[in-house]
Length: 243
Image 1 (cartoon, one colour):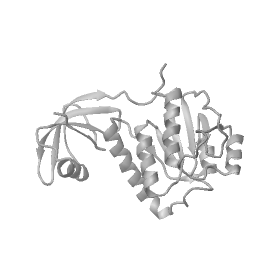
Image 2: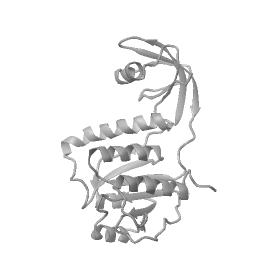
Image 3: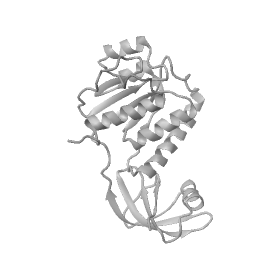
Image 4: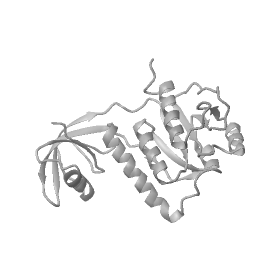
């Protein structure tokens, strides 16, 4: 029987027992309806899966006995930080989910000239918590044992200043035919909003050493562009590379 795979922020040790937090208990018992005695895999973001079984469950508590820890080797050799222009609601949620599945190490939302207006200061913590739950859910599904970092939104200017490694900027306003450069192992990948980046932003990026990438002659939605760019990057220098 294939067991459930669940994230918890609690310390985990082979041979130990843990009582799941209220939220995780509810998800495991009420949502997944995981039966007592069935195998379960827990992870806490340290790069390992902990194998065990559910030994007790009632309306308030769920207790798991752990017996083995296995190092999960499915992180990309290419460290990708996705600098994504803010989009409305479900689009941004979808990008967070797919960036997790496609192996991005971190995601930095950015405010650009054409992006959604800035998130109110009082709502940033709530939004970050929401995005982190999406990262956790996507990691449970795709098998990652390390969580993609999700950061508070910053301005385009600040994002350029903090970007490291190879900086690549994608925009539908760029001419087709430009190809992704050779990647050194660390990539800062910039994706614009629906209208792409403003001319002044492209100029600023080039002055900061960014290389430009067209994703083809058709205009892609921002969420499509993020998935395509991440896939191309993984194929070029990450875990989809053939050699």
